[in-house]
Structures are given as C-alpha cells and as structure tokens.
Length: 76
Image 1 (cartoon, helix red, strand yellow):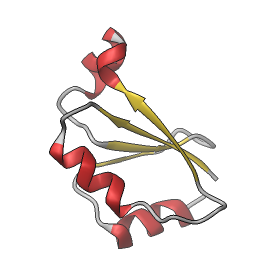
Image 2 (cartoon, rainbow, N blue to C red; image 1 turned 30 degrees about the vertical axis):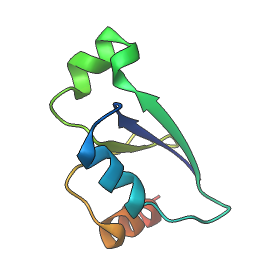
Image 3 (cartoon, one colour; image 1 turned 90 degrees about the horizontal axis):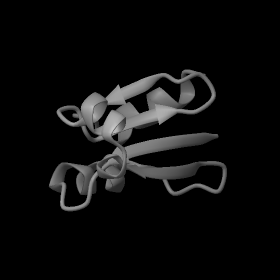
Image 4 (cartoon, rainbow, N blue to C red; image 1 turned 45 degrees about the vertical axis):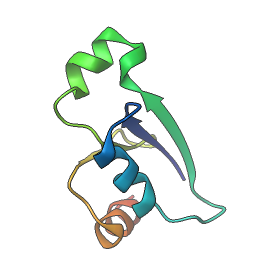
C-alpha cells in the first residue's frame, strides 16, 4: 500500500504522526512537504499532518494514533 504524509519541516505534530506509522515492508510512505507548493500550503496549512491513501485519495487528519492509522489502512 502507498500513502502520502503531508507535513512540513519543523512541525512537531508531523514528527509525532510519522512515529505512528507502521514500519512494514508492504507500506510505502511518500512524504510531501507542503511548503514546496502554494496549493498544498493553502489546502493543508491548517490541517497537517495529514495521511492520504494513494489508492482512493481518502485522508486522515491529525490527531491520530497507531490504532487509528491501522484502521485507516485496513479500510481499503
């Protein structure tokens, strides 16, 4: 499964979110720094961190924990 983590450098909540992601071979996490794109900054600036499934575009907004992340990943 491929997911994208929308974040920005220096975001403490983003660091916490990244620690909730499982480290399993079948999960590929793409990190997207919203500061690099004006449209992403406008869309996610007040919402980060946000985890998105690339298969269907579903998004999981912060706050989330490891259990919620696993549920989100299983919803496919």
